[in-house]
Image 1 (cartoon, one colour):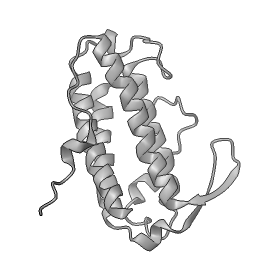
Image 2 (tube, rainbow, N blue to C red):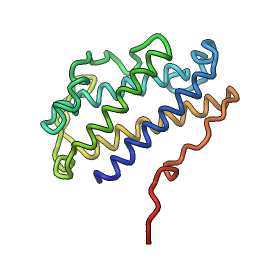
Image 3 (cartoon, rainbow, N blue to C red):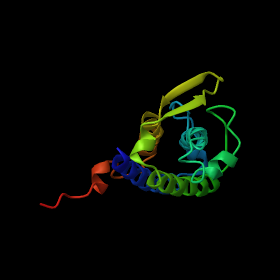
Image 4 (cartoon, rainbow, N blue to C red):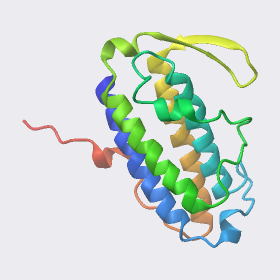
Length: 177
C-alpha cells in the first residue's frame, strides 16, 4: 500500500503541475466563469482542492508518524468551509499547491506500512467525531483531488485548452523480466 501511495503522490504532483500550467492559459474572466461544476469555476475548484488538502493534512498532522513532516499544515488555520477562498489569485494558489505537493511526497515517504494500519481520530467540519483507518483516509485525500481535477480538465476543455494525458499509467514503472 505504501508504494501505491508514493506513486499517487508523484502522480498528484505531476497532474497539479499540468493543471495549473493549463489554467494559466485562461483569462481571469474565464478562470472565474461559472461553468456549472460543483464549485462553479476552474479557480474555485482548484481552491476547493487546496481547502480539502489543508483540512485532511491538518488532521493527519496529529498522528505520531506525521507530526514533523506535516508541521506546516498543523500551523495553518482550518478553513471555515469547503468553499473557503484561501487565495485571491492563481499565482499564489499555484505557489502553495507546489509547496503542499512537495510536503505530501516527503510525508508519504516517511510513513511505514504499520502506520497505515492505524486509526485516525478526527472531527468533521460540523464537529462530529470519527475514527477511521489511516490508509483509507489517505486514499480519500488522493481520490478527492483526482475527482475535482477531472472537473477542471472538463472546464478547460470547454475553453479550448487541451490538458493532455491524465492517466497514471504514464508514470508507472515498466517491469523488467
